[in-house]
Length: 158
Image 1 (cartoon, rainbow, N blue to C red):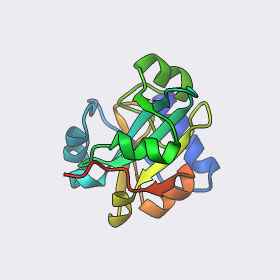
Image 2 (image 1 turned 90 degrees about the vertical axis):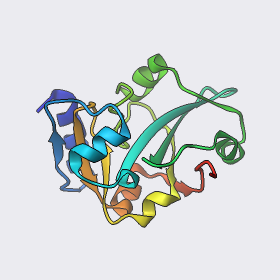
Image 3 (image 1 turned 120 degrees about the horizontal axis):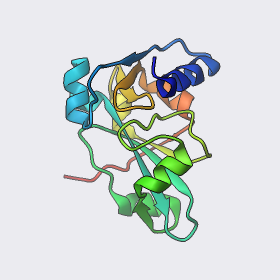
């Protein structure tokens, strides 16, 4: 197993869970590709998106459904400050992972974490496991426990 994916696997085990990281030969660079690869609905894919507080500089991880977009104005109300999408350098430096493989657990620094309430409607979810080639299956409740995220309505209204 790739050492980075193994690192995520080790975090899963250290948290007391038995979910298995699965690796693919080819990367999945979009939620659509990931859903196709694991043969699930797009809403079951967990997108891990990193934002940054404009004033505080603090990292914010948003776990959202593959079909949703984040409404930054809702996020700003919750956080109490303006936010911006984090640049790739900040993401790698602060999380320890590159965009496209950010897991919802085992991050380098302590992020403020939020989970899109729509993810709770699925029986099973698929989340990134450290690389664009690795994922793990998890229930919404276990993801919530693992990540210590707070459930919020943060999706963009259509």
